[in-house]
Image (cartoon, rainbow, N blue to C red; front, side, top):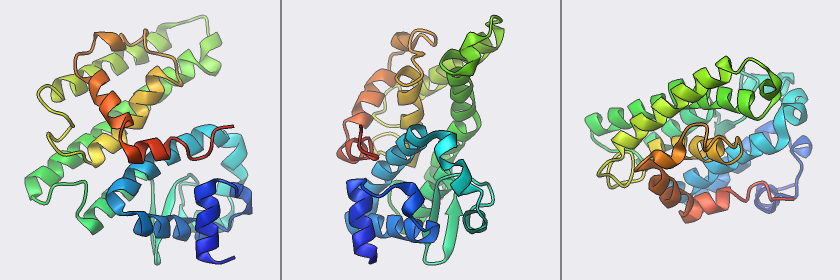
Length: 236
């Protein structure tokens, strides 16, 4: 199978993950980015990766990600992985930073702006992601059956606080960094969307009391690249 044939099947979502050689998979993904332009493809990629992980779940991917071939690419044993001609990067945010740095897109060129953007990417990694994920466990998944609601309430309270931080940041701004959409927005959009959608925690975190975040989320989800990413993998 040629790289173009593989890319076409990836675009059409007709190729099951188990059928892919891992290195060919990630190389084809990078080729996709090159063909479609980084600025748009980054959003599509980030959104698609979020849906891919949620769609297949640990059971569907676990045995593939603990193979020696995959662990050679990513010792964490998790998706996603990017192989850029032998430069292998694991973790979705590390991939975002790498591609933004390499292309000079979706991140400010000046040092202060660059590190301020990275500050908000780290905010997602260290706060939004872990806390929202715990809300998902205790509100939607196995933890939902626990009689003691204190763990759920603790994570819901902290998630609401973090949303408040983001809400304050967005006051007077269209995007996290101001007028320009950046990898900071990309890293955050999927988590906020999943919190109120997939996890069903809209009321739990008082989402509708926020003044800025709902409109920011709507703007982000309306972007064409994000819309493309939401359809990867294709919905049943």
